[in-house]
Image (cartoon, rainbow, N blue to C red):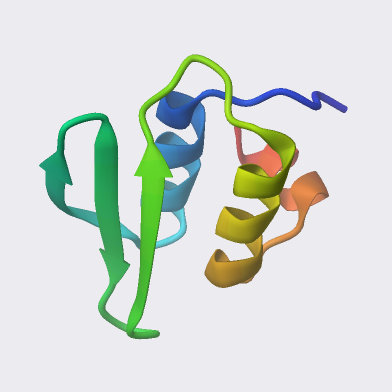
Length: 71
């Protein structure tokens, strides 16, 4: 299983599970899921830090395995 993910990869997976890009401010992409009413901020970096990645997937309601599978 891949341990390092980029902001681009995470954004791609979140789009597949129903999130849309709300707006972008600098290097941060603000995504929103209208069905679940959840907002997530994804840094558009080459490599996301471990804590940042875990916070994003926890908010989105998916696991690290699901993230790898959907990529």
